[in-house]
Image 1 (cartoon, helix red, strand yellow):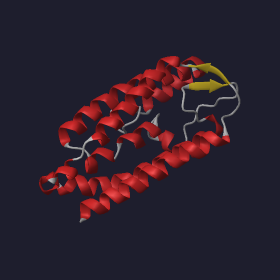
Image 2 (image 1 turned 120 degrees about the vertical axis):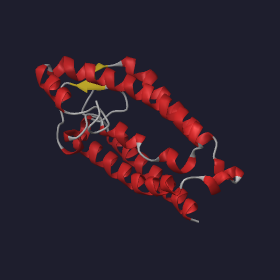
Image 3 (image 1 turned 30 degrees about the vertical axis):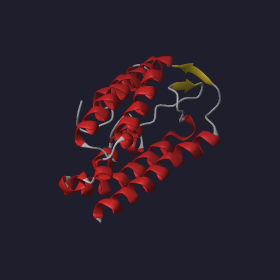
Length: 186
């Protein structure tokens, strides 16, 4: 029973997580992008593929859930809402600077407040948190996680390159003191 509640919560969390990006996209960015990083696009594709892998097959559908560790379910129920809060907070702190594509605008500022005080890319951290623990079969989860991390690294490096080019030593100091997307891990 707890598993099905967790799945329901996960679906609600995904809807709320996606809502912030739909709302922000409709509000538009802070003007036309001056500098973009097309190199980040394959990262977006890999992240999308990782979700397809994570959600494509569920051991629940085959009745395998009986052996699934209850700790994964409980972890997901805690991490799902945390993911939503982290995403909404990150987008709020970015304000009109948020974009799906890696880009800088003329008036771009280096945001270091809110969740950006803990990680440089909190949206990716929020994406990483909860999904596979409830839905995916563990080998599938490992494959999806590997694909996701490759895509995320591509995007992080492209975005960090843009920010380093714009903010120079200020960004270098920020990068050396704040982790990319997992707090306390380099």
